[in-house]
Image (cartoon, rainbow, N blue to C red; front, side, top):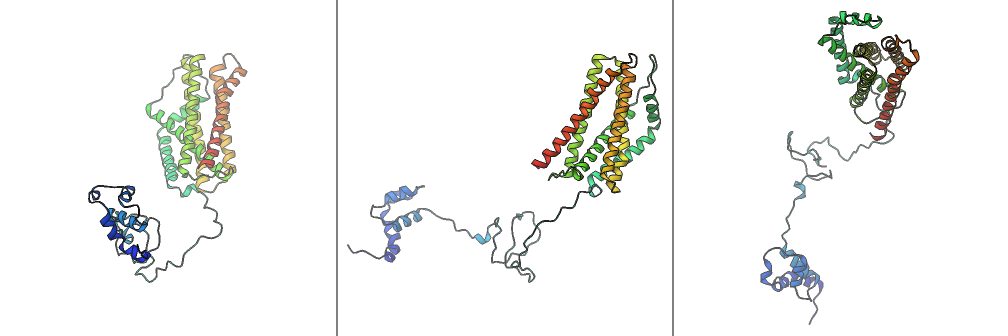
Length: 342
């Protein structure tokens, strides 16, 4: 037997393979092992490859017409087409363009250290600005409509009601007005804490600022709800219904007072570059004043008859000071959690 050279073997391999494969083997799908098993043991690798190629039809793909998700450069100019929603956003432009000013060989690289980001300014936040302006308008309208109610609540707060005194019940609009002021107080306290962490506490998060403020507002609102439930539970156990109703009205009035008192300082901080240190001091003063008034009202409503100052102070610490400390701990933890994880 004469041995042929490699070139002649590779050229005659497809013809030899076609004659060696059985006729019944052409139907259906066959694995490469089955196709090779039909060939004689003396089949060369070129013959085996030709037999496999004869049984598999490979689709010819024009890669120039396929999507280019890897953004690799192409050498054909892009077709002129307008805006289309069907065109994938990951399509990139070719290196060859009919526009003479398109020069992709001049690449722009971002070298060096990135600069400091523009500090967040609430005056440029359309959402928070809309909320504050809406709160201002609603507060002004509500105070104009409910001025007599506010005056009556202020007088009743410092007046000790005797037994048998007729109590004036609030209307639905007056209750809604107070609840609105409570929500406003939650938002304003959240804004003050947000600016405190941004300026003094080094709070940095990739979350949108309005989402962070919303989280703080939800935490503060939960604090007021839980504290009200604790007051309701302890009042239901230890005191009568009339005293509980009187305290609920006074407590709601104090929270509404915080909302009204904090609104001017937040507006100054947001739009007139007021100092954050002065804002924090003012906020602490408002909170301390509200707590002192709460202690005064707790003593007058629940413990004045027995003149038990120590018991009223313990009651105040358990339901006012401890929840306030827990609120601060939760806010600090949430700020740290958002800074680390987002």
